[in-house]
Length: 70
Image (cartoon, rainbow, N blue to C red; front, top):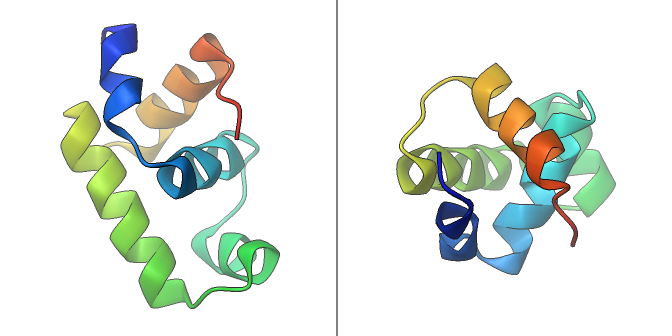
């Protein structure tokens, strides 16, 4: 994946991606960000769609490789 793909993410999606890379579950992300699990699932779906990936591990590795910041 190219770095430019990360620019497609909203700041909140980048924040969720960073937490995915830290190994947090959707439930843990929801608690951390004070949002519902449903909202987290929506953000994760948007991340997958925008990055063209459908694997949590792959997007986590991308986040680590690109040093995703909030």
